[in-house]
Image (cartoon, rainbow, N blue to C red; front, side):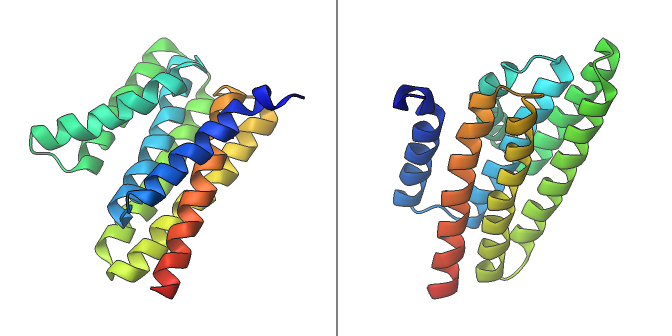
Length: 174
């Protein structure tokens, strides 16, 4: 396989590097993991793997628009997630994938929100571990070639692990 086939890995590493260089916070990590999980949910709700790529800027837009109308970011993501679940049910998409993605968003989202409510250093460690842990979810989907395109899962793994673990190390040493 040529290096050109690894563009998702390269893109993930570049995005992680830019995020690290700009000094991410636990909020940044928490939002990143929730938007990632929302991307998977969107793909499952529409039963279209390509939707996950479109949901990256879409999820970011949800956070921004939510803030503009006075919602906390996780509230805006929760509203969109509920709408996606309702849409998926009405479209009669495969239930197993829809439920799995909804549970994953709930679990990762809960950890991300808890990270915001604890001591800042502990919160940064929890948010970093949650983001890095999301790479396991990415790996499952990459291997199964299910719900999202493998390129998205590959991109996410190479974003989640370096960004999450770098912030854990900085929190532990800082």
